[in-house]
Length: 462
Image (cartoon, rainbow, N blue to C red; front, side, top):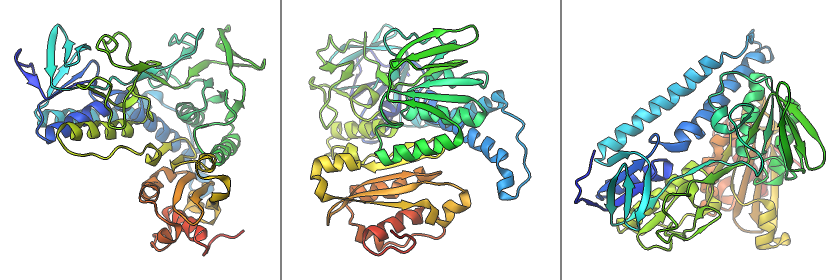
């Protein structure tokens, strides 16, 4: 839809990813006149280059593992290999269905959708394709792109980013994954399931270093068992081509060689050259700075999603977009408690958490005021059936609420919903222990952990 040159929108949104489109949908629902501008495809990174395609690859990997391991369940199966074209067809089909649905949603809300590369022209206007879209308020939601390191050029050939990895036309025989955070361990897990010889390089002391240390150690144990190699505690120094691959040298002198190097050290904000500084928007390291209501220092401009220095998660951007829309519509939304945001890493096994780690709890409340409990999945019937190992770790304030739930095990990402309620409603272990959890489910393990923390353990012992 093209706008009338004299139209002034209530909200002009630059960026159609999770944060931008959520704001558009909610704002239009609340009666605001909205223009949504996106240079690529509606849905942004999450739908097209992030959450959805990576989880499709991981599920394909899960199917491959199941085919290999059928005999463990008394089922005669054989694994003949990966049809990468078929995997991409499956992945792209999932994306296409969601994309079509999202396009229909935006159209049904009478949102003015503009395709093109936008630039902030003033605190109340965005220029796109030579036209200016003026709003009483502007929302910046331009997202992020894969980051690299000084001296390390991502060329899309042997040194690739996650964007390249998602469309790779083959299963690499071997790969080095630079970065042991969420992106790195997910690709390492999927590639290992596909048959790749994988080595992860992480400069910090543990994989998934943002998680509770116990979760990191459980994941490392599981990866060793799967044959995924990793090097911890020494940072990247250099990379060079070899005759048939790439060689990576670390600061401690260790050298690794493989067919490919995946650079998975995180994502940086898309903010340069878009007119933000010229409009007076306060920034730091490329991120747009905001307050708890996602307001910038410019009264007519807000920002959400990967562009701001909050958790780089699609559901965080989504929630921030809703918050901005409701604030502009005159409602009184509650600021987001970022500790209360559920976090899931979809490798095999999964790592899921909500709340704060044991280390952070001790910093906040004092070491003598923090109580923890670990419930091993070996005591859970459903987990035994699934042949998955792991633990649920609870962190609570002494005689107080549960402030952290940390889980490792296949499919435990599906249990983070109840964990989110436990944290955000400041539940006591005794209150959760009163709830009846269905048997046999993995959800039951969450209940059993709280029974034990409440002082009445059933299927657990010291």
